[in-house]
Length: 120
Image (cartoon, one colour):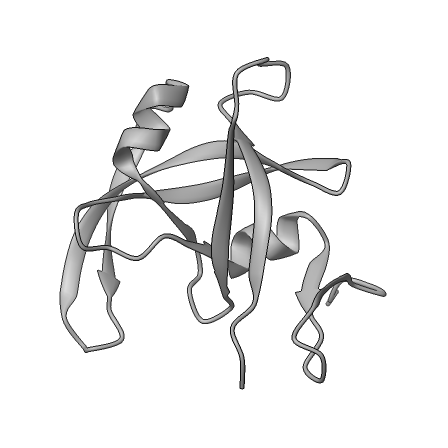
């Protein structure tokens, strides 16, 4: 299996001219995207709360969370992000993927638009 990366633009608000373009590892096992704190602070993103997360190694960590707008392929959508601390991986999580209507093709490992989003 290979790794899949996505290049996205992050903005504090969709009308902001200021953005950060990031190449992130897609991690569909991570609910939220983990973005380095210094990038979020540079964009003016404010934390809206704190959450506990269980890492792949089983450790429980607490991190601040907030919202950004993510842009990919001409689409823009809000998503929850974790304020990553030193040593945390920077990844694009499932919430961001689903917000943009994207998925990873299981055969090619490429990003593609979802044919349809899951519904009840």
